Length: 275
Image 1 (cartoon, rainbow, N blue to C red):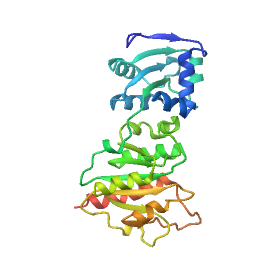
Image 2 (image 1 turned 180 degrees about the vertical axis):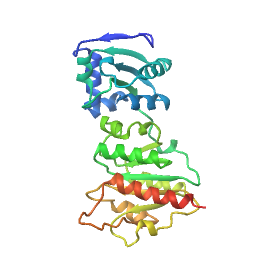
Image 3 (image 1 turned 30 degrees about the horizontal axis):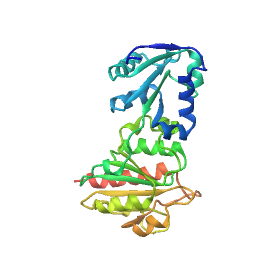
Image 4 (image 1 turned 180 degrees about the horizontal axis):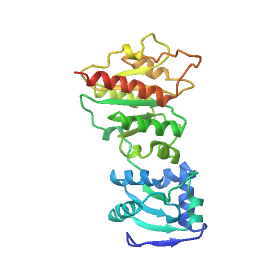
């Protein structure tokens, strides 16, 4: 079918509908196809504006929540995307959300390689190890976007960065933040050291509080955080330039990783932007 030509689907047993559901639910399907699903007006708009390649955009006017829907449809059409209108019931079957807004796309996965990330003197990177919850990873991406982080490096991933909950929690920041996925932490450490990036690892096992830490190094830095339950592995702790912690002044012994990581990034950003 030529790009831009619209067809209509009103059967939940249609192979395209089944493909969307499979890509939503199964990491193996995403890995084997190199595709993933983007749901939501805002997420799809940001993906298209970032140059993400779409295979298809499926939509249902019965679910539209905005007056600017034609803008997104035209963006997809101009990018050569096949447009598919579906019935309200079919869209409900495909949707991963409680309150869908009528847009789901099948898109090509982004390249997520260390060698594609550029390094500049003023850069701040965020590195996370063994993150389990897709919602946390998506929120980290939002935080990276908010703080203009030069890249998010995901080491030894437990969750798939193209999981629909990552896409949703990132609200489209996935498409604006440079991203790299490393199978091992050693690979990331080697890349950081090769590029003379100073490593600040977060851990409760230090007396150095983050607000007393000097992040103004004169070169690029990386702030590293580990899974909430276990923290960073010894691999990071022994290869870091400095260890830092957030003080816990109440009864809780830890913060959500997205919160703690971005707090540290904001402090580094504040220091490095001071005259």
